Length: 224
Length: 390
Ligand SMILES: Nc1ncnc2c1ncn2[C@@H]1O[C@H](COP(=O)(O)OP(=O)(O)OP(=O)(O)O)[C@@H](O)[C@H]1O
Ligand SMILES: [Mg+2]
Image (cartoon, rainbow over all chains, first blue to last red; front, side, top):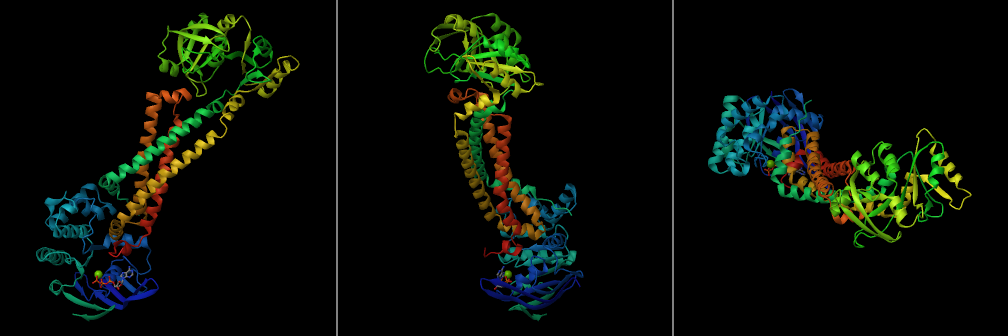
């Protein structure tokens, strides 16, 4: 078992009001498994993804990754853990606009002990994989949405994490680019055995996964 | 654990927002330039006290600085044990061609002056080559001028300088025998010195001087010698007042009253303005860096790296600005020289201390201005930073 979520509760305080976002979620993700997370807006999909990725901590419950408990760790520990284990793919790519494609992809590697030359090799491999090795010196503003998302995917996989977390990775893309991105994820899944947890609103996208999980009002209502 | 700061982002940001960066650096540069200017004024005002000879006494009339003393008193002063050399200065006043040409002119005794301010002076307060000293000593109508004065009026060795006496009536003409520079900030580089004997002959042997300067053997107690000198003339018609050079110079600073404090306050206000400029820029930057910070944190960059990255930007921008401002001041005042200021502060020189102080100040301004946004960004939660709702 790669990811084991047990009884996770998460609420946010909004002004004087407390919003219960996740209300006792249990979820298992196997190594190499591709899970699609669906559900209406506000059902807590992003929140769940953030908790699994160590970007936030639950109010209660347990999240184990590779049998390591994530809950109760310090910010610094979580940061170090993220850099080694998680690859994020965001809806809006979240590339750093002041850096070119190569530098963006290299960012996670600056946290490792790799030499400059090794980093270069890794970055080129990743950019090659997403089919952008001829765009290494382009800045995000000089690339299309689909290309930006592919750079972001290269960045997510460059440090070779065990799993990828993708929050509506095709949500901002046209059909063709979305298809490219999904094919890329498919490739990473089948060839490199990456586990993927992907939030999506599009049933057509969700179908590509091994498994479909439905979230509604903070609880999992269907798991097929 | 390795905690690398993504320094490439620092330079990428500076490049990307070069206009904002440049404006901020220019604002800080201007403030630091003014600070250097004000600090130098203060330093110039106080240099006489700070750099006064440690083993030197000044004897004036007990009545007032403006009452002269007989030249022959020097024998008595010289006789006091511990006194190594005695020289004297006499304020001349006078007019060089036009009233507007103001610079200090003193009648002195060249051989003893050379001993006190040249040979005996550890710092060689008055720097003049041996041939120039010798030419000055041997030419009774000779004079020496400071480097700044020479620059201002274009005086060269061999030039004639006519002076019209007012306190000391008569028409005088001097030959420039040398151009001195200073080895210590307390010496003014825009003064003219000439032979007291020439003056004394011209006015008909009044044989009086303004002040005596006694160089002491440092082994001796200056306080005791001070009392001994004044005791010598206690019951004469020429009672004296002897004090250390520092105390003597302090009385000139005191004439400026609160001016140094006022200048200090202006400097503080200017500095505060620079700080506000820098802080404003850093806060704008912080606002722009929210999502970037979120991404960096999501990638696993620790809070400390975020802090260092952002605080460095403030320091870099302010230090570049500050160094530019201080360097501009150095270049303008020490290298080109500004005549307008030269009139009030003949030796307007930015000292190394002032330069270092100014640059150091800009570093601190950058640090303080950078800390606020750096702390905000370092502490922001990833999900808040990445949140689309702001
Ligand atoms: N940082 C936060 N502070 C306060 N409330 C939050 C925060 N993040 C999320 N929420 C609230 O929690 C609820 C669930 O948010 P979440 O983003 O997880 O939903 P989602 O399923 O991803 O929705 P969408 O499909 O619109 O992205 C929403 O009501 C949202 O307003
Ligand atoms: Mg969401």
